[in-house]
Length: 282
Image 1 (cartoon, rainbow, N blue to C red):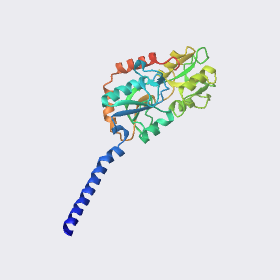
Image 2: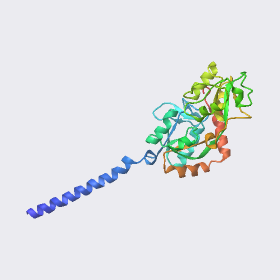
Image 3: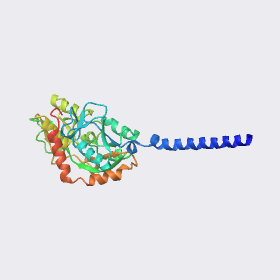
Image 4: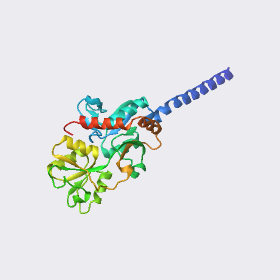
């Protein structure tokens, strides 16, 4: 009787151990899996404040996507690209509105799966995150007030003595140093702030990429875009725009395949539509 009891106890112990191991195995992947492998969503971080790449609006018109945890929606070129990628991945797109400085930390921490925010794959950023192939290519311009002496500038050197700024923590701000004698102003957090500063005369111009400048001049009749015959010296990566991913992300190959399926004609059409559809307040 004692022997039978011991055997039974041993069998129960073995079963409990096996059950414990089984439970741990089934829970571990879910507990440790990165967001990109998780629950069928594709979480994309962007500012929603950089028209025509991305902006915030009050409804879902023109294909805008609701921002996570908000009654507002995000629209723009980046959102359209994100929609195509999410569809290709077979995942539900979730837009996570994030300040520019918070995008890379959010990606590294797993809060988002990708950055699709008009971000250039600069050498400095590549030290921290990976990038896909480019999904847009642009060049640098200046946004100024109409009627100002800088509207007719042909060279960046024509901005000698001008009060010029750009967005904080972007290569746009660093290239201002290429202008001899420029009155470089403190960097600003976002393009909305720069537009207000330009309108009020606090600055004479700000550095931007062509799509944003076209957007700014379309939204405000007092603004003009200056394209240069002798412009800023930049690298190809500086003026390209790509999807930011966590180092070693398994999504890279699949996203590159999806991007390869978007023709240049389609990309141009999407950008033209974004410029046309941007909110007037942007």
